[in-house]
Image 1 (spheres, rainbow, N blue to C red):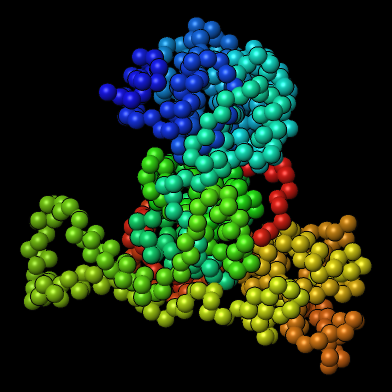
Image 2 (image 1 turned 30 degrees about the horizontal axis):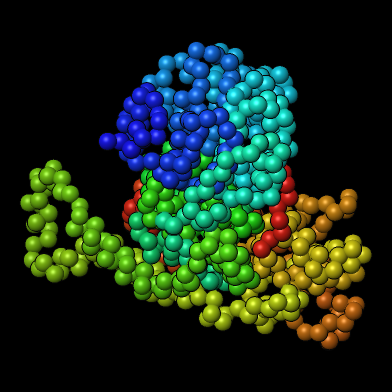
Length: 621
């Protein structure tokens, strides 16, 4: 007996449930569906991403809709167009045996007139993003003044994205007597304020502990130096040959850059962020769902629409600015009762965030070290052996066996195995045998709480810059550091050794940020004055007096003539390595072109799987 039958659902819905292969309701479905079917009530449901919330509100709203009435009766608000389309498709699948139900998706990036036309034909259920819905209301293209049900899905994420005013305005357009169902992973103050303002004595259900993380997700962090983030990401991918993952970055720029570097280094990867067109997003998600992409690099906003089964890992390449957002990230894995792993690549200055997240999700992180090259080679060797063992033989090869046997004649079984494995394995061992330990405890960078002090003698290879703003522009070292981090979209530990003078200043970044610094800052104006940044000849060492001169008496300002560093389009410097290009580990299904002049790369993969300030809002993808 299908357990959904015990929840009070209609025969038409149960028939669709059988077609979808659902057998046992999730906890949130088991609690919400009978409650919502029994009576019209306001509801607050707290449950993590991936617990089946769409069906928890989808089945009841479909059963309560009058299919013979073509007027809009239900509005569902969701944070992103991906999630909007996903909910719409799921509701259509749920209602496939309910004659007359019409569900319309309303979202940005598509024709607003066509969406208005679909609604005019008759749409009992509208699924919308807040921004586009507010636009349609302002234009008089939609009437929600008579709806019976309003559902806020991922309410905390919508508010975190800056949609508070839109949601308040939309809800103010709806009738007071409607039922409001609010589904959220966490309950921050803004969500509670919405509930208090627009809901009356709501029922509340909680799956797990309030604001806690999913019990099916394990959490681990890897402590590295900031400059080693990307190399750490590659090693973690190589140490998990069957990884099928979402990699989170804070900004669209970093998301695109990391994805490009992964593709260049032979990994099957793609970027998902708000600068992509809807067609590009759809193409990326289709490839990811089809497992043609192993590592999907995404922003938090764009990833809200990702509902893909069997994601093995979530990788926090950078921690989110809001620690509550971590819950949403980790919810991409460990779905439908399956186990998943959430990985954080973290620097020493960010360790306090780990403790904050632990308090929110009420789970502990396990600290691990980045695998060594030898450990990765061992993992890859055993993976390859298992792959060979499990490969199904295509007997079309039989016709070629005599010729193959002639070529391999004289080789013993042991020699043949060694040679077969070495075809793939040699590239890994050649790449990793000379690599260094990435553990930040190795002491190759000295972290200091005072960023005015040098991290390493003679900058340790860091790039030092001269910039034509200083204390006369109302900057001290701390405010200038904050300004640079925000303008350049860099992390807390990416800008250091900030030294402010009256009319100019110095600061350091790691070399990987040089192109970004030169390109971005040289195109910025501060109160009408153009900022000029140059590579400095000054190494940042030694004592300086209040005039900016070092102890030797020579001015620390650089020579101005001919001192501009060359700019590079794209603003991201790739890490090069000494791995060979020949043969193998590159995914054949990756469609990204190789870059000109990039002759050295990480080992190719033969399979498809192989603190910054709070953000300025609203900032929407």
